[in-house]
Length: 77
Image (tube, rainbow, N blue to C red):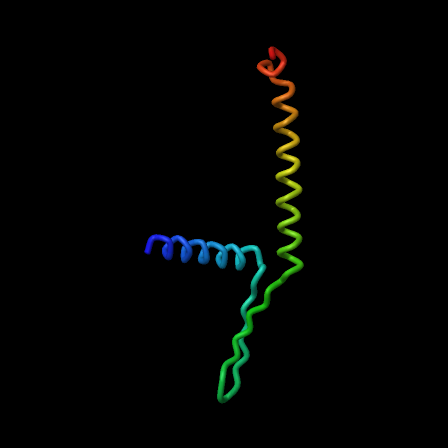
């Protein structure tokens, strides 16, 4: 039961983030007899955002490595 709750929460966070970052869009088309709901996944936007996060993480890692190399504790060893 606990695993199901965690998976549901993770799914809700993913869907919420997807709408916030405009990875998903929902549109509707109505006629007299029916309503059509379309979900569009913007794969290019997802790729761009993933690459942006990777680049920022690499830059942060490089910055932290430089700080560690130049720290007083590192020079004492």
